[in-house]
Length: 303
Ligand code: BDR
Ligand code: CA
Image 1: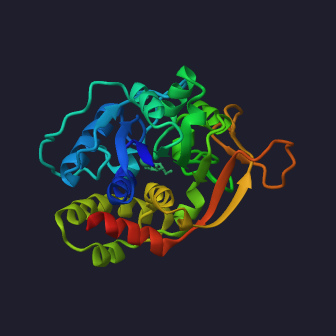
Image 2: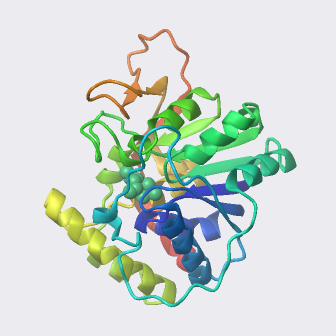
């Protein structure tokens, strides 16, 4: 299987890209607005490409959500998106083609063999579906980090960042008929990592050192917000699920949709646990993940 990773790097995106580099056969990184604006996200992706010394091509995609204003998360990931560290100038360059065109082309080149791992707002995927709705039939597996399983948001009272940043796009993708595994916010909070634990486990190679340095401001933010010293690597959990589906310890097939209107409800992940909507299940919802496996796959990415 070939994978495209759609991402808005982001500290936890960086962890996911590290793990995926070893664990998946990655065709391309597709960049989207999100944690930071598209230009910064692209520079971060190119920096990570240099750091990992990977040949994976990088494509720039959407700079804005489908309908409403762009939001970002500088307080979580730093104003540059990767912890505001000093870093060397970027050497790699992005490809000329737009992400959406690359994605559609790849789906024709690898029909039934393509995996999508999405770690940011779903704008690029929604735009690709808008161009060609049959994309959904050509995708073999899609793993999404986004949404919530209990309606407790991290960006609005009910909205997880990736879904709150483009609710219309998330609504479209969930409706598309793609074979989705959804990794929502809650199980990723359950397996928070202490910085000291990561320092002990990840070793002191150049990639590990750069990654751990990025994590420090992120860890401080979580400590202030949640009173716990640790970091939540949501995107890494999604990457682990893509690499090894057994990372999911508890799951349920459900019908899920994304609310796009309402005074408070915009961005809410609506989940029909009780099966009362009359709708068929449209995704596999991850309710618990294997912490040991997630850490092991990150470590494997650093070897
Ligand atoms: C998601 O939001 C972003 O800040 C993270 O990179 C992750 O993709 C978690 O809600
Ligand atoms: Ca992300």
